[in-house]
Image 1 (cartoon, rainbow, N blue to C red):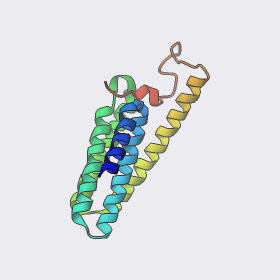
Image 2: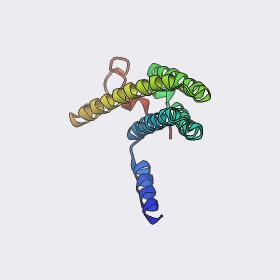
Image 3: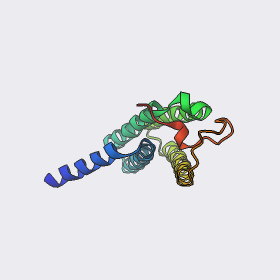
Image 4: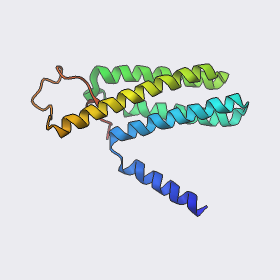
Length: 153
């Protein structure tokens, strides 16, 4: 029991100390993991476990939607909202129908989004390391990256 408390404390500290951009990666990772666990449970005909994991992935999609900053993210935030909304709807339907095929598709899409987010973070870190602040540039002329989609709060 004590060992689990230590793990939970460590996980909580990771979340509390993470940059907002890193939290998005953690959300992607969690959604992917819960969908995969849901698929496995469906294949094992374990309805309760599949439902529990798919609900967790649905909740993560709601968090991803809530994290969007439409003022700073502009069109990219709107597009992500549409994608997340579609994924959430599909997760709900797949959970009701226990449709592993739909879940695989959403999981693949999430993996692609996660990889895109990783690339945007790498680009931002590289720009930061090179001293490119983007302050003097026309905001419409530079590509949207992770720093343009800051989380609320």
